[in-house]
Length: 216
Image (cartoon, rainbow, N blue to C red):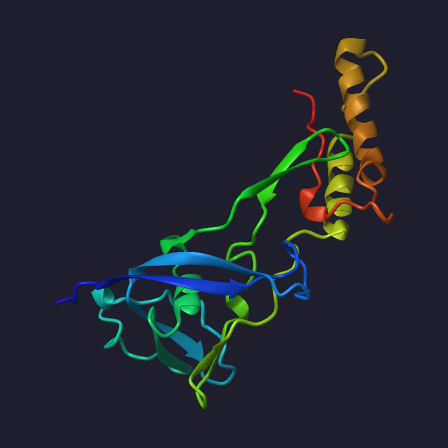
């Protein structure tokens, strides 16, 4: 019979980058949060690399995590909220509330208002794919900071695909009321790199770029 889950609340502090998706921490910034969830979970790491094996979800006492057989090539590790509040919060971020994460509004060059977190959450700071456990020292390493989920190469590739997809949308015999919005849309796509300062000192981060909307 499954063992009931013991719920625990702990506060934690974690290091964050100088700004969202930056790779530097020269400013020694931190953020805080509260975890309220299972007091312990069991996870599997790849024995050879020590990296978290994300093929297996964290197990709680409800799933009898302590007794679940260990798959070949993995090692089972118990993570407690008392000893590793940041790690268990990364594994169960749905159990986390942040005490100092607010939002910031940026008005982009095209007039669009982009809203984002002014302080990075755990998943905006660390990648579970890089979470590593050292069986010799019984310690966890969170790995490098998460970088931007979007690059300008991807933005330009998407822009090009959008232009290709709109080829043939304009014909000479179209009424202007139908044709002009497509002309404007395609021009906005062509202007997108310049609009967002691509390759200049005022370049907007790729993850903030707003694509023009195709006419209805």
